[in-house]
Amino acid sequence: MVSERLPFAPGSERWRRRLEEALRRGEEPVEVDCFGTDKYKILGKKVVVRVRIYNEKLGIWEDRMAVEYYDVCPVCGRLMLVRALEGTTYLACCSEECYEEFDRITGVSKGEP
Image (cartoon, rainbow, N blue to C red; front, side, top):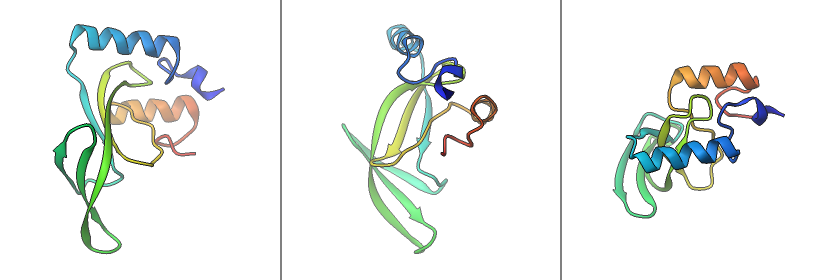
């Protein structure tokens, strides 16, 4: 199973302990935005985050809702503050190097099936 090969597989006991430890120690998270584009603006933060994302196909800006939560990188265990569009599927890593290591470990590109 792919998740068994990840040092901090989401939902694993090691992942849970690492997340609790990072939050308890007050570690500064890496911010990871999983919007599928570099063209976006964070419009407001509450329980749900409002985001304005540029739609390349239509050539317009669209307001969308996103979720925001703490997680740990499945490769290195670094604390992350992850934001992603509601209803999307993704896998967040803290850096390009960790995405590359994830690809090497799993054979899956950027968390895509």
